[in-house]
Image 1 (tube, helix red, strand yellow):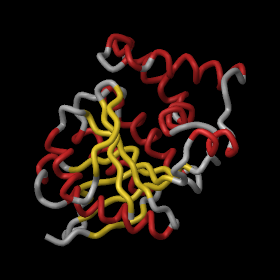
Image 2 (cartoon, helix red, strand yellow; image 1 turned 90 degrees about the vertical axis):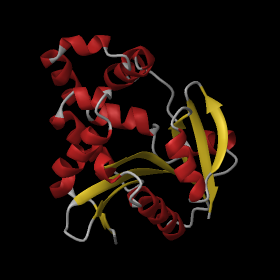
Image 3 (cartoon, one colour; image 1 turned 90 degrees about the horizontal axis):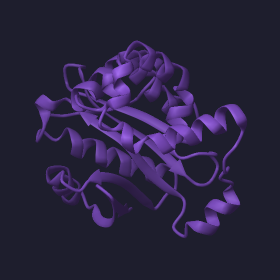
Image 4 (cartoon, helix red, strand yellow; image 1 turned 30 degrees about the horizontal axis):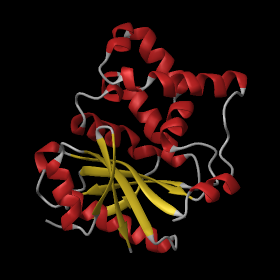
Length: 216
């Protein structure tokens, strides 16, 4: 089947968010609700260093999406903090409506991130990444980071993921970026193998995640 890549706009966010929730049914973001996921993904439309595109099939149905970020030292935060700060008010509402989410399995890894972003948002406390400090600590820049990818679970092994990875290669070339990177769970061997089939290499392991990279 042929897949068509399209740049996302505000109009497609509800359908893209629905794909995200189907692709990641047990994630904290999914548990926080459709409205929160839409706002979280809207962050990719809010800067000229972030990108959101979706995949549709021949019938026009959205079957996958990718959110990417150009890491060149311009944005003051990484993707996790950027999305959290952008969707902060929606996150507060989600927790008020669903207070049991504080016990979600993902929360134990997010407390430090949330506290640092609360301090940054309300008290302007925290390190700000400047282009100079970013360059001094990162030799291989700029980098196009694939922050999140999701596909319709019914279409696993149908070429949707490969089509999106190939589109990422094209985006990197348009941006004159030579290196791409992403993070995958180390126990997600299916995703790792799929990335390797598309030319990606295994990199460093950090906790439960592994960085993968590719040069174009």
